[in-house]
Length: 219
Image (cartoon, rainbow, N blue to C red; front, side, top):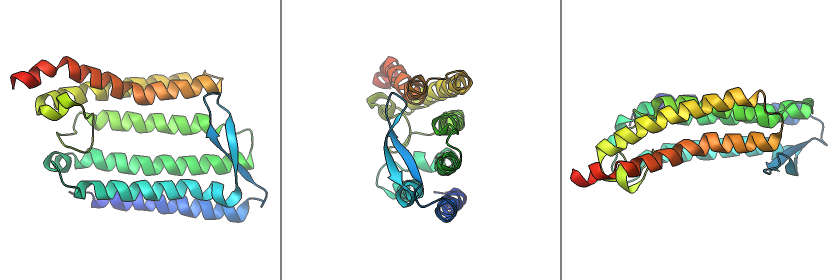
């Protein structure tokens, strides 16, 4: 699977995340804390110390990058995943960019407490959803990546139709969230809106694949 370029870019973004964390550790006061574990009320329910707060994003980014690099090596229908290398690689690099933005947002908030971490991280997440949604229709039938329901896995035609439809829904939902995030002041509503934008397209796509189940049966 041709993921070398994506792995290099993703690795560089992960290293940039590490470097940013090291810079923050040197620059920020020893007593600096970072808000984590945001609830549906939009408020952080715990704080991490400087070292732990700065290392969590780089660690998660590196862990996910390694996992995504290993998935194509797993046994299963790999031909479709190989044919989807561009979309899979975009997911990989976009996630690394998102974690880098999150690390930068945490450091910015530590420097300026008025900086809205959630809003800017969610906006970055909306950009990721637009990018992924725009390429979702190009994801070919495989066992690892995409809207995996009994009906999409049973028939490549149902898979293709479902992913083209889900991709369009994802782009529209992400764009609507991005626009709404500039006017939603309440963090609780912002979290709910982001959850709907992120999870909604997948749920809608799964339901849509169910409506196409007759095509899989007649194949």
